[in-house]
Image 1 (spheres, rainbow, N blue to C red):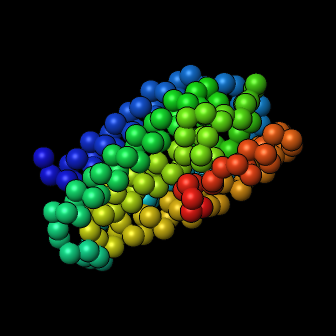
Image 2 (tube, rainbow, N blue to C red; image 1 turned 180 degrees about the horizontal axis):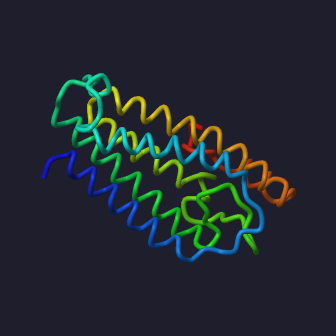
Length: 188
C-alpha cells in the first residue's frame, strides 16, 4: 500500500468515526452564527480536498515542495496516525459535549480529563497533525496551503469558543486556561 493510500485510509477512519459518533450529543442551547460556521467549514473542506484529491487538482497546486523520499512518507503517515488517534481520543473523552460548531450544550461541562488535561483543543491539534502528515506525504505545495488554511481556521475559531466558555464558566474556565496549553503542549 502506498503512503498516499495509507493517508486516505487514516482519513476514512477519522471521518467514519466522526460521523458515527456525532449521533449522540447533547442538545444545543446556543450556537455561533451560521455564516461563521460556513466560513470555517469551507476552509476545512478546501484543506481536506487539497490533501486528499491531489491528482484532480491543477498543476500549479501539485508543484513539488519536498523531494520525493520514503523517509518523508514514513514521517507523514506517522504524524497523521498520531493526529487521528489524538483527535479520536479527545472526541471520546469529550463525549456528548462535542459539537463541530461553537456551541453551548444543555448541561455543558468543562472536560479536564484525557488529552484535555494538557491541551484545551486537542481535537484541533489532532486534525492539524493529520493535515500536516498528509501534506508531508503529498510533498507538494497544496499541502502547505492546506496547513495554512486549517491553522488559520482554528486560530479564528478558538477565541470564539474560549470567549463563550469564559462567559458561561466565569470562575472555572479561566483557571482551566491557566493550567493548559491551547494546542501544543509546552509550545502554544
